[in-house]
Image (cartoon, rainbow, N blue to C red):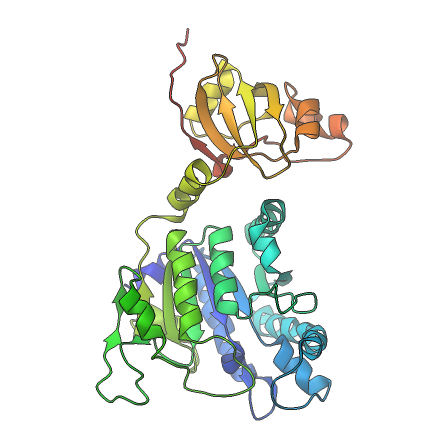
Length: 383
């Protein structure tokens, strides 16, 4: 089971306020964070991409603004988040600098993971940061979120991020080592659940019996939110672990076999994403491509503007479209990188000419291969 972490290509780690913030000092637990930085550096040394979803801004801002104890009003939480976010990111940078790792802050709202164009923007930003070796530090954008439109906990945010970037492992670090069939604080015979192959109603019922060990002003996610996160993750082809992060070096502990609960994904992230594109999204338009482009797509390449002969429909950047051959046979479906108005200006042209045609430097692909799935129902006779 440890291979799900050690052999993952891309890992998302969720760190909650309960672990990160010293509840006595109301400050970052620097010792714990330095140990976590060593864990992150180890993953990076193995060539693994690492994304951190971290709480803590509100807890840090609460102290800085001298806000009262207890539950904060929405506007107080927003003010605390604004004051604490800078300190939070600076703490990560201090911890990771000795390992020659640079952090980058990203704040997301639910809309950023649900509205397709914003989803693609966020995905591309994170992908770019990972490609240059940075460590994205992601948090909910509490300063603009409302009580009606917000994640409310970073468990589900972490799962949405894992889905967005096609991660193959998500680790939710908590103050409990996983899922039990009964509340272990009240039942000495509570059985630990080491692996969940399928999230059934029985598993969901267990979530109501397993609670966080600590009751404080810092954490917001209980076991129920972790089960919801697991549903999102495994549907996206991402294994998910709930593990105890209270001791130093929690990721290394998981790698060495420490007890945790694994929720098992039964397909890989790439396959899950392809299925989502092919079977879930309603196409908003169609593009027709030449025989050379058909051959390129069958070889696993991206669709370039030069191979497109016509576009139709009404679509915006990020919408799903059908790709057809010259005989109107469906070849593929994908998420297009340009709105129709811009797509019409670049079809038939080389990618190097995009900036001249549009007045800005866009993506070289009309549809990137990661955003495209072959669905052809007819074959072109070549030659």
